[in-house]
Amino acid sequence: MTVESSRVRFIAQWLPAILGFIGTFLGLASQVGYVTTSLLAGFVALLLWIVFNRIVEKTMPQPTVRSPPKTPSPAMLTPMPTTPILHSVCELGPYKVDTGEVLGIPLNAKQGQKVKGHLEEVDGQPFDWYIADEKNMVLLKKGERTKFKPIDGGEGDPAYTVSRKIPWKARWFLILDTYGKQYGREVRVDFEPVLG
Image (cartoon, rainbow, N blue to C red; front, side, top):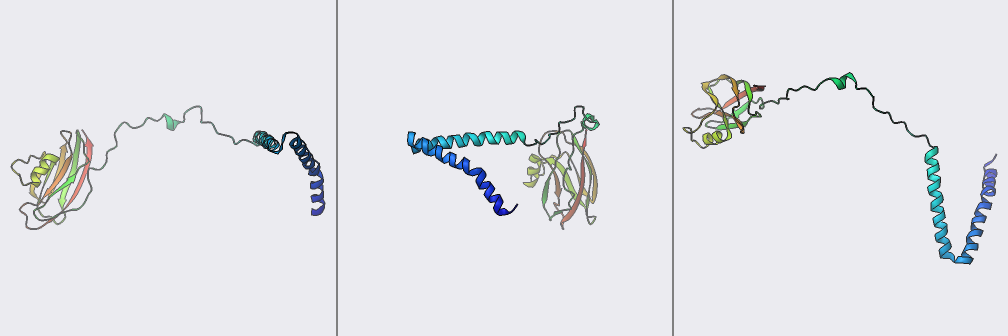
């Protein structure tokens, strides 16, 4: 079959339907008017389009949706750990502390947690350190050393071990202090939080 013969067949097949539609349209238009006939034709076309779409939807294969398994897998039955996830207390550093500086490093530690680890000066020089709440850190930074009350600390050594429980709810800081030192210091901090 050639392309030309398929066109002729298509026209011959649809020509009666098209002529019938035009004849019906003109007949109704002469009876009720062109506007009413146009609205009626639009309504019928919309209705046929909706019906055609529903038929196509029902005949199209629907994608299969997998239902979840009815019995839980062994992984689902494994209990979640009840131990809270602990984050590092602070960065390792090293922290550079200039001469005469009081450096406050925020600690990620809460009441009841133990801060455990060590501090060391990179070149083996002595330095001072403290763990204190925000109120006491501010006192030290203001130079009010007689009112300053840390919960832990050390003075005059190049390295320290630390094991201290956080006693109350507050914002806590590790304080590195070079008060009275001729040169600055670089201090490496290795703390980890421990429950209880």
